[in-house]
Image 1 (tube, helix red, strand yellow):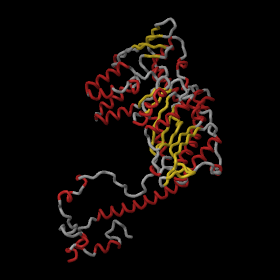
Image 2 (cartoon, rainbow, N blue to C red):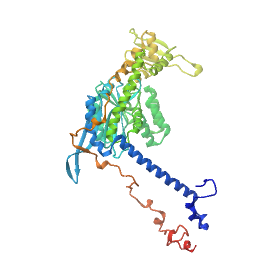
Image 3 (cartoon, helix red, strand yellow):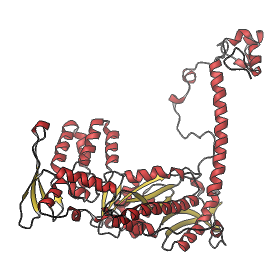
Image 4 (cartoon, one colour):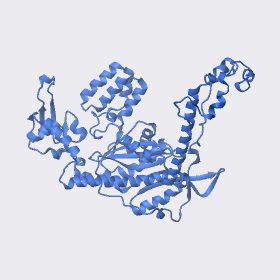
Length: 518
């Protein structure tokens, strides 16, 4: 093969050059692109075959993985007592008849005792979300995520369901409430999707205050608003409204929205303020306005979303075991060297302490619990001074930071300095390192050889649902109802098909008379 930059061509193209009068009419650039595209398709097909073989080696066969689930669940419960797994199956039908000793997989919920224990020492918030799997069968993985005082995210509960509908979400939420909602009040954050929303409404008092405080993701509300009214500035205004801590400022922005778009104002006013705003939240969501924790876990699960379901369950066990070991080692090391908070949390608190210097504090009670804190005027910087009321006993400040994040603001720290109090006593216990260490004090036990996982089968054979199987590789089947707009123009206008060589009707290029003349 000569150099492509020279004036030579491969011998396979010589027959095309025999008809020199037609060579100028060939699209050589298109031919090269078609050749490259064909080679790329071959390479992609080979890599996809290798990928399927790799998945088979890692996770096993797709259909057989469903039957491996009960055995793997038994192994987890043997080595890790307290593991909770709820496997639901249905009768398996073949030719409209029930097959004996065969069950059809329906859905699965699982969690671990280490996760349940960890939540007792984390922030009392749970974010829930779902993600589609890319395997041979169309399953949805529902999961719940929590956050410790060091702002590390931990997935704690999972469910494999056929789809993200009301029934599946209700199944997941019922199991979640049974094993995790043991605090006085738990804040549940989700999007406003029809599945979770209708499931929570159907569960009624079990997901109502005071046991559960349901909140919406602010980003989803802003996105839904933008999809409805296509106003980018109003979408950003809604985001600022959600993050605003002071009710008066929130009402001013709400009034601005009403002046710009009355329909948009009515849409937003129809959503309860305490569901999506910081100003009216009363501190239940610890400043978490979106489901970004769940989205972060969603992106990290991409590596297992194309594996068989038994491999997915195994991956959650071993990845959580590694996560608990890594974060636990870090937390205990910091605690042993004398840290009270994690260095990142300590730096943030120290920055607030620096801001508290120079504030004017006026005591307003004999018990030194209520203060009026005023900021220093800065006329050269165009900064107008503001005064705030601080109540140390109720952990309250007019700026809204204290009650929203459960950590003292600069005004509260200034009041503590004035009354000779230690501001650390006002920090929520979840931020202290001793609480973070309790999160990871239970470790996942190691599971040995896989030969123990495949013992004598004592359960009915479990098979997947054939109705949720993805179509095989090939051109996808169109389910769109075609109309006149989908027909070629020549069919709509009645124009006959023309030859690609002479542009005449009645024949095609392969039997064109003008080509035979040459």
